[in-house]
Length: 296
Image 1 (cartoon, one colour):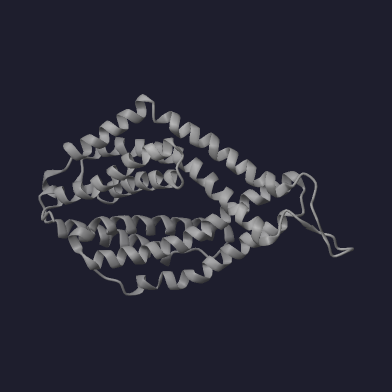
Image 2 (cartoon, helix red, strand yellow; image 1 turned 180 degrees about the vertical axis):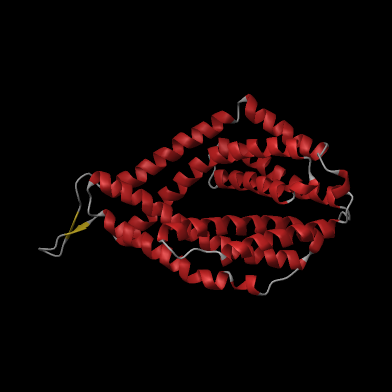
C-alpha cells in the first residue's frame, strides 16, 4: 500500500484504465455485457477524477474528463437500448403480452402487428446501431488520443505536489467525507412538490451515491474496512435508485409507443413498470438509513 496520496491515487486509477482497455476487444466482438463493463470503467474514471480533483492539475484532468464523457455517452446509447430490450422481453413474458384479452369470450388473441415483438425489435435495432457507432469510434484519432492521455495519466500523472505528498489516508478520508456530505445534503433536500421533480432529484441522489461508492472503493486499499463498508452501503442505495430509474425510463418509452401506436396492450407493460418503480421506492428508506449514523 502506498503511504502518500499521489501513488495511491494512480494505483486506483490504473485499475479502471486496465478495465477500460481490457473491455475494448470484447465490445468489438459484441460479447455479452462488454458494453456495460466498458461504460462502467469509463464512468468510474470520470467519477474518480472529479472526487479527487484537488490532487490534480485542473486543465489536463478537465480535458481528459471531457473525452471520457464523450466515450461514456457513445457506450451509454448502446447500453440503454440493450437494457430496455432485455427488460421489455422479460416483461412480455411475465405479463402475457403481446396478447389481448377478449372480454366477450375470456380468451386471449394476438393483436394486429404484434406490438410486443416490434417493441423489443426496435430496441435491439437501436442497440445494434449504437454498438456499431461505438466500435467505429474506436478506430478514430479521437479515441486513440484518449488512450494516449490515459497512458499519460498513469505514466506522468498531473498531480499537484502539495496534495500528492500528503498522507494517503488523510486525502482519501477528506474525499469520502466530502462525497458523503454531498449525498446527505441531497437526501435532506428531497422535494415533495411534484412527481417529476422528485424523480429527477432521486436521479441526482443516485448519481451522488454512485460517486461515493466509486471514491470509497478506490480508498479501500488505503482505509480498509471502513471504506469498504461505505462503498457497500452506497452501492445498495445506487442499486435501489437505479432500479427505480430503469423502470421510469422504460415507462416513458412505453408511453411514447402507446401514444403513437394507439395500442391498448401497452397498458399491461406500463402497469408492470409502474409496479417496479413503486417497489424500488419501498426499499429506498432502508437504503438511506446508513446516512443517519455513518461516520469516518
